[in-house]
Image 1 (cartoon, rainbow, N blue to C red):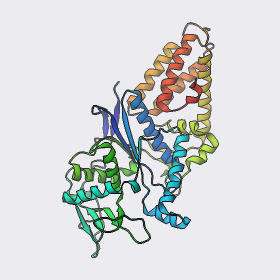
Image 2 (image 1 turned 90 degrees about the vertical axis):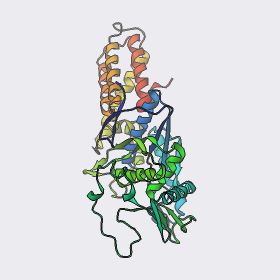
Image 3 (image 1 turned 135 degrees about the vertical axis):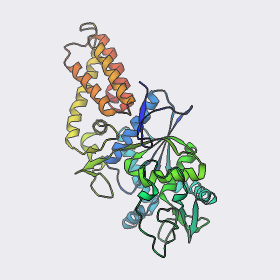
Image 4 (image 1 turned 120 degrees about the vertical axis):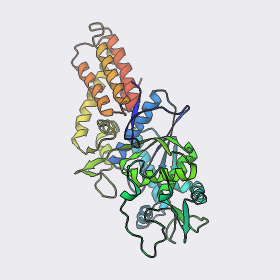
Length: 406
């Protein structure tokens, strides 16, 4: 079975056919004003498996992720803490890396910080204006949303007339309520950079386009992020790309579901979140990661603290099965587990080929582990097959690596 992934744009599972060469993958990163929470972990662990499986399947992947380190909320938090905004953001970038390392999330090949890409962002703003899609007013620059022909609504499938926007006040700088800022003038107490329009800072949507296109070109293969980013953020990126490059911004759009608490999205802005380091301190990275992989990435999942306890027991079973496979010395009935391993491998990879369905992949793994536990003796042939499959599963899922270490 060939890999298919769900493309938000087409609203169906599509065969994955990368352009020759490497897979260009861009994943939206966090705004770094607090510690990352379990909702972030679910997203980045999920996209880590996407990358791992693509690489396991023989693709070269170029993975870029951003850090939004210039934002009003960062400035406010930094001022309250008596810190310079970029230093405040740096503190949480370091904490983010610590959390992701503990979860065994592979580091992106490039982490692009907004503060380090102002020249590229300025070039993108200038290009928007030069192409007739942007206009400057008193230090702000806005994007003419209605001027795009193809990109508005590509992910939400809404039309301009579907958007109910408040009428513009008489003193508004905008030509249209749907226009969005690609450059914003800065107050004296806010971070800012010199520009042709005065001292200012970037708008959110153009940041990701400018940084991703610097490292990945005018079109990415996979653009990932949470489903709350579809509109306005990702559609606005696509509109900017249409304006500047005349290309479709992404060949495949992937959006992960929410981790919820009391049916609401776990969110820093809502204050209903549990930090990654809270659960890492109690359960460790392997348990937290494996627990997060027990549902398919697109599904919303309600937070359940009992998941960690159950997952710890399941991992104990896998570790025990690996130990038995290592210790196999020829006893047993001539490889009774070999066909069971073969079926588990088939189910595991069929699940991953079906839009990275880690829920079913994990189930196949646990089903096999249960069969090992019920087997009186593991033959040497069984042991070889078990270890080979567990190593494959470990490479893709990023778990039980220590148990398999030489």
